[in-house]
Image 1: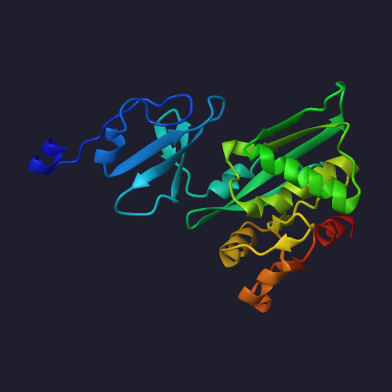
Image 2 (image 1 turned 90 degrees about the vertical axis):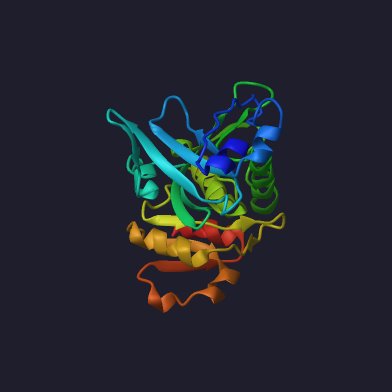
Length: 257
């Protein structure tokens, strides 16, 4: 730290990370630096995400997406298009969500598989989404809609290694679970986002303009949003059909139309 200040030069310190994802060893390393950067990704995927865990002179919500190529790391200027490029067509259990990474909206594919369990205790597997939040959504679907998941295995996967960490991902997760259970296909041109309450209501979310603009830019024609968030936008300015819903039942009725 003294060398960097005296010579006025930037210094990169490479530290080890323990199993919990924290910097190993003394915490003094994290305290003396201006920024802590995490370069993460799955071994079987070519995409890497650069996150700022600490940034003394800026926001920590921004991310950078890169692709490992033969020529080294290459920036991915449009992560949404990359994550949706291999999306299957006319398959149940798939829905497109929109998550905010700082000020950047990113569309990601949500896949759910509901199948008969071969064990007395059915399995619940979740990759890229909060495990406890999945149990909450399943409980709401059973209690408020009368659906049955008790004796079924439930698998949820967010394609591309993206993690959906905000409540706005509740609605696409629920729609994917319902689609897989009933084998009803969600239209390829539809995306959804909204938070689900314990009473089955769809609660408002932030950054709705940015999410809708991203969906429209990528060619989606329908967008399911919380009804109470409609007051923040002027639907006449968009070419995409914006459907406001106030409950999970209303959102699932759109699939059957």
